[in-house]
Length: 471
Image (tube, rainbow, N blue to C red; front, side, top):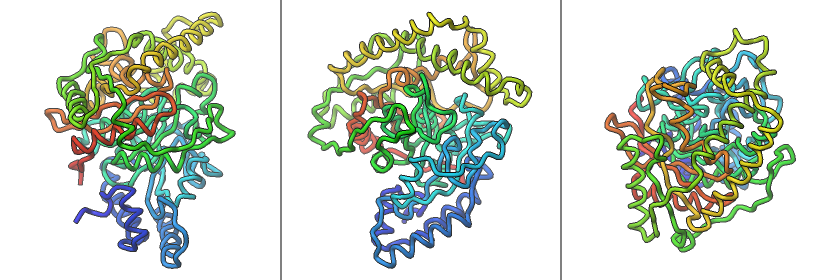
């Protein structure tokens, strides 16, 4: 029998509705697993077993009394510690917010609770979310459950590690340059970067304002694509606190509709090579779709390098303008990885009003050209990054002459923040060391449901999530 904590969120909810398991039993199993594994992976940082079990007892009473149950009733979830959860610390991994406790739930958290989910706790992040590793001076380093000597990625690395290790059924991350997708890929789970505004960013820090309103999003992370769809349906919908909010109704995409979609795929960018196993995973995913009747054609969009350059302008140079006032005078309190990032962007040519305006106009032109190409290929299949999870200390915010650089190796994810495309990650292969390798399924804005329908076909063919070795 499958261990309770390793079930999908959808199956947990179904078994609770069928009275096969109780919410108390399920939450206690997660508490026990956290107690055993979290000292090894250091994924969950703000956690109250007593509060979770109290909510579980209330959820169990609702089941026994025959009350109406939400789609996530009794399911334990976690939330990235940059998103407000009432009563939990939301420090975004920085000493500058040490001790901050959210007074109320972010709208997406309130929606999860209304659907019956039980929030176990908050998960670890890099300082100010500015890294693809998860480490900070408040809580230390998070380790990958596939290999403790490696990173689970960032900035949603704590969330990915907790879900992969079955310490949480599912959860929520955020993504301004791959921060949901890279950790999902590194940790062997699924993740969705939605279109900006599809799920409200209200209650996230740093706030999604200005260019970050279309670079940064919040989205679901889980062990199955079906669970991503379930969480998306629960959390989606406009909120007045999100400047990108769009009233797009959720819809289910049927198999017949999905199969009509023409899929373009590419194995590498050209300038930034990928590992042979990454290339093989993309091929395997393309072949899996082709064998199921999809038309799958080699296709690499034009304008990738321009999209990457523009992404760095907004994430790096504009991000530095926004972060600068927050950290000024506190440089000695910052983590080394954040100082590296700030040093890199400080070395860039300073922005002027004209150069910022030009970049903004170029971004809109780039996005229009990109979407025009997707008229022919509404879904793209490509790598998530250039390789699998790297060892602690192997990469950083470096650029010219570096053996490996965040600016370069993660561009496969960064493009789609610039253009605002939804993108899902699903496991599709393994490295020679046995590390998971995910592939990225990219769609047109507001077509998350189609993206997930096709990602699920890849998952079904290639096996999806597997339990990591940490115990």
